[in-house]
Image (tube, rainbow, N blue to C red; front, top):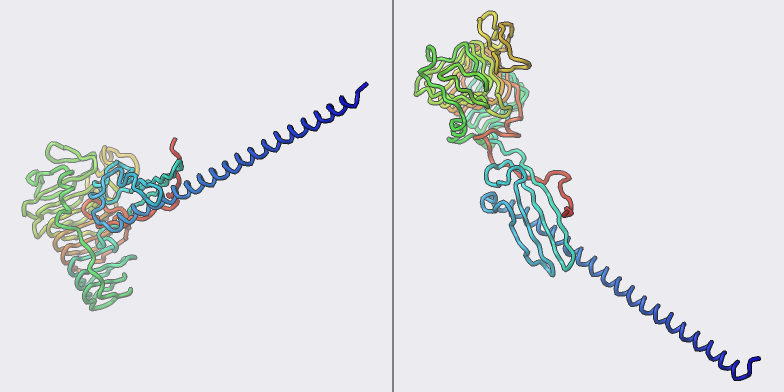
Length: 422
């Protein structure tokens, strides 16, 4: 039997326990609230730091773009690697890296891409972002048309067929001729008949410089002029796998260099799969009859001539092995299939690729060009030629050595990305 005092003590103990538990619970809730507030504050601070770190990384990229835009010599003035290291910005820091992702050398080509990496740091937050810039265009502007002359185009009793513009850095004249192409000139356009647009007063188109031959001479295989039969290339094949002259040394890119030492050169009944470089060509040098030229490397020139060159090529002719008793597709010279040792092949008479003549050129008969023709000085015609020109943008889009201008770097689509270090 509980006494009154015992009941009171029991009741008081219950009240005390209730108050104690309530106090502990309230204290726990309070401490939990403090922890939650601290977590929220830390989370907010981290979010703020991350936003500032991201802003620093983006700013680093923008600085890189500014350096490229403002400095024409940035490839030599900015080393491949870190451009800026832990530079303060606001209350954060940024680092900028610029590298050539193809070969790690920013100085060896105007056409290699640039990978910019920006890193931003604020407190414990770090953000890393990248973009890639690629070179576009940049070939000398004379490559923008199917035919260009450094001075004049002078057509006499000629027909010109081209789906792309032809141009001259001085004047264009047409006497008793039909020009089925758009025509541009720095100076005047006179004569008739023009069946395309005529535009005068254009900016002079840029031409390759005096060093245009240097790379090919350094990387080509020489042919001794004294080894030529009758001072000409006749009934032969030059290709990466075939060289009939001297020690028969071949060139993997099909680049062969022939120094005429001022003498004239005749080229006829030949097939070239490569780049033929003719130096110091005499004034009477000519490509005659039936020939078939194409580059071994798609964007390389097929013919480079230092001097003058006459074209007297017949589009209706062919390189017919059976008729000429010459194998123009020997082993080592594939053409649209496997090479062979028979005399059953027939090749069209055409010059495919980029042709550059540093001096003057005379065109006769009916030459067929598939690519771009650039004449350093004046082009003239005679004997009612029909000049057929098919334009290829390969050479201005991806210019070969010696034909590059200054390309424009543009941000590659979809290349901007956040990078997570592993």
